Length: 131
Image (cartoon, rainbow, N blue to C red):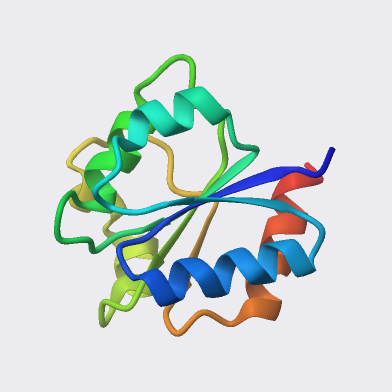
């Protein structure tokens, strides 16, 4: 059974693009839009890794990240944050604690800026899942 990668993004084109790339790389994609009860989906499907967009209109990816990282049942799931926000990579390196407003939470396993470099994304996924 291939590892499951959950893709949480509000943009349908990005969800489909990442899902197709996941399948092409031997993973089982699980697509979740921003309006779905995300935490229920994560708990129900138990993905091996989550790709999570930071900026979504219905619910911020940061609040979802915080909820995952504070859930004893889900906190072990690796998370790759993606964002098209200008300066986001600098913020991830030097101000993530301020962004999530909780210094006790670990940083994401990886951060990738949009537009997503698919080759780099799957290098990171393989690295994370092979730990």
